[in-house]
Length: 474
Image 1 (cartoon, rainbow, N blue to C red):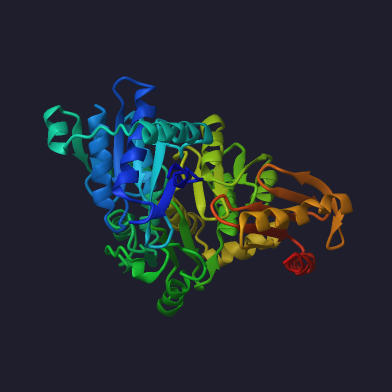
Image 2: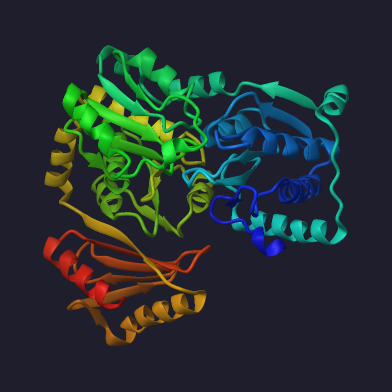
């Protein structure tokens, strides 16, 4: 049974009533309790949840287990975004946070995400310790629980509203006054998620009658994944075009990922927006320092940072790795192609609400439309062509064989007529080619027999040729 409980890049996720059950949640909560108690005699922890089916019920189970282990618990009184949980941990000097969320996964999923005392996603060394504790709990069948009323009696339990302090924290990082003066017209898709009550409230304060969509709870998320990707953002783009708005913004289910459409209703891919934010922070706000991205993220960020005399650090896929560097270095931007972003002096966690507000700040401080900024970025840094392809295979064995095909490229020394300059194995296999800003990455999914292939080049013809060659590997 324990093989079902593995902490991936964002914790443990499962299908409700299949592997994600009250029984399994008790086990994981006890394992986290053991981990916390092994580090401190009287830990203090915040617990939150998203808007999914029975999320409150599962969060109550977690609270009862924590209280049964004499751990002080702060329970969020309403569905709360992942970055809000992160901020609450840091601002209250807590020992960790547990968030019941499956982020952007389909509606039938729920998950448990643990963040340690620094507010970042738990790194591998922490999740491995928790997995060891899970094994022990399963073997010993030792789960300790008490009712919340008992926790109140022992003064170990408190309901909290983490929203106000988080919003004040944002005011220190985003120029709310300048946005308000600009009288922007925006649309927002809250995707039935945890940003309800925060992002919509902020936009009502800062902008002129924002168009708000899906600003109510629906555990089915309208029948879709709560993910602000290009497909889901098309309707918002159409509204922006029809109403003549300045932009459209969105977040995913737990508000850690962002989605942006410009004033022409066109989707701005995270790869591009991360570069735009970097240019804004280096030039307009005069921030100093390196930036960091995952190995699967566009090298546009590298071009921007180099233009201002700074390096870009590279990590495996997963924001927990970016969070680790954030805690060590004074980075300007940390980003990943799947829609994760943080900035200097913010949180070691991705924040979709922050990203959306940065789009508004960029418009306000520059006096330019997002579409104009995009054109100027392309003129200065060139155009970057990139794509991610997911190749679904039948088994893990098939996946390994598929990966072997790409390993063989090194001996050939070339791919699609391009000479291989460097091979990296930070996460999967990446080939860097002689052609500027041209690379190929293939990495296996950690949870299913899927190969993820990433291609990028600043030369459209080369990009097209690489794409054709990759398809031959099927």
